[in-house]
Length: 70
Image (cartoon, rainbow, N blue to C red; front, side):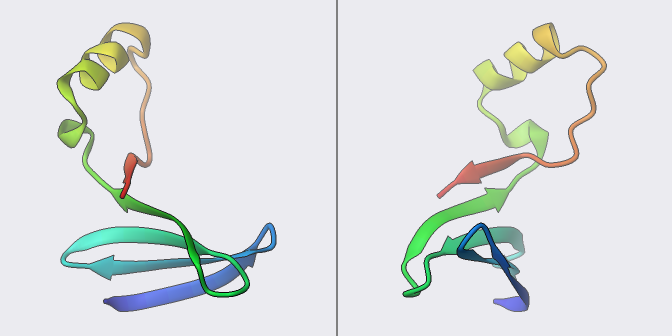
């Protein structure tokens, strides 16, 4: 893990960092319990059904971030 940043958001703590070359976001409660973890991925890494849906229903849209829960 490197380049970790932390901030308090909506009563929880949010950390962003790089792990094994992937950008990661983790939300923790005030006791330090992990509540949610997400990995930023390339749009091409989405399941094919999701890619097909976006291509059909969101033509021309530009996505700044794509993530998956982990």
